[in-house]
Image (cartoon, rainbow, N blue to C red; front, side):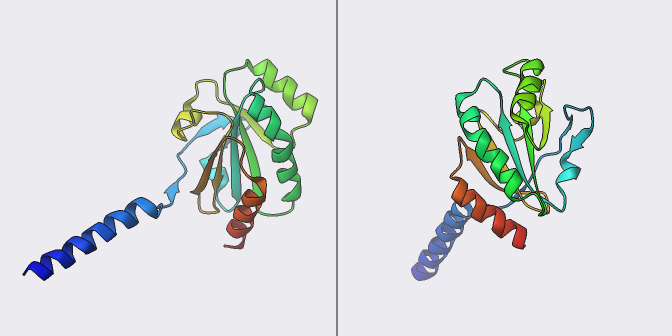
Length: 162
């Protein structure tokens, strides 16, 4: 009887450890925001494409530092089932976001999260934060701060191959 209880305890501990260490793919939250041209973008637009959602704002030093690399990523994967969506947080006014887009020629869809609802739905608290989403709408990885772009490219390549 003692051996059975010990074995059961070991199995239970193993299951608990696995539950903590093996992340389960979570579906990206539902959202809907107009882009800077007034076209509505939603979670439905994620289906069938690998997506990097970048949460940022123009006066954020880390955001400004990583933005050329986000732009390069968008260019490098332009002809693949990949997209970048930028969600500007309302730390800066929308006019600053429009000016940043104009000054730097952002080659991807940019939205302004006026009430922070999308940022909150994705659990962002620090900026920049980027979320990599697979073709079925599942969250593959969240990067708080600037990601290691070499590793990000590997993650994108893996997701595109699926």
